[in-house]
Image (cartoon, rainbow over all chains, first blue to last red; front, side, top):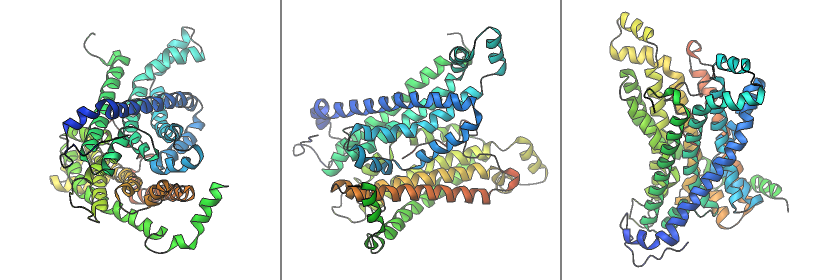
Length: 226
Length: 244
């Protein structure tokens, strides 16, 4: 990533002319890569967490060991987990994805199990009475009722991931974190400020969008008719 | 070549266990940065959180601080903080930037849990305390605080773990700590050192998590002990605020 610096005000916290000049070749690609890595993380995280959570909600003895294992993963600092993998998977997107995904698991599994636990027994009984069986009852009755809680977990995990993606710049991932790191290396404040502002904006926008989805997923909590 | 064996021989090399860049010195650095930030954050966040929780007011403020704290990456705060000082080559830029960032990181979990703990004290307990003649302050400190202690301690525990983990990133802006092995190792492509550093940081985090669990168990009165205080008790508690 190139940041020509001589022409810009290095002491200013934000030099708009740098942003204008570098939007196309530096800032926007970093933002896009940040978004791609976040979305990949969330999709893989959800695909892994859902079956485990459903199984743990059914077979109760599985839940404590699942919580402990994901809890230990969650406790290991991100830079350590990234560094552990570098010798094996290199400075690659895979190396970035493994820790990012593993941090989403605890949050996603816990919220999904809590959501499934909170499904009223009467609803399950009614569904059974109407002839729904195992998998079908799960997909059409239980999971829809648990969806608001699941989405609450997705919100927390997404916002956390957007922050953690910045750290993956230390293993060569070109995202908003790399923008900040370049600014730091060049003693040039603008890229750090721009990278931070965009990361925060991205997190706020993702949170708001998922909040909207969460509201839509629980029409029974809305008092006014839609 | 076997990387794990290389990392192991790096870790067991006596040279790595002495001097100002040895493992003990780096561990102490990491813990010192963390302790300084945690004390500063506790002084700022706990009185405010406890008092607002006692008053049961401004709960929205606590929620918002938590949300903002989650949305602002610590990595960004460390790099931004390092730019506040224009003094070239000031040796304390790294540690001071890290201190600022870690303090900000530690505030939300403490504030949110202190608020939640105090505001969720049952009404009948508060009424009983008032009936026994406690003043507002006495009621807060001698009845509500002991009852809310599990959540308050859980908040301190979450902050501590996040701060110790994030202190690793200080190496990026020139602070010491165990992160040095990872950051320097990555810079010179010394995989054994990177791996050894990662193992040390992970071990430190897991040990501290274990110690805090024990401290929490001892400190909380058996009468108010909950089955799992790190689980969110309400929508306010921030047990999953953010990994780092």
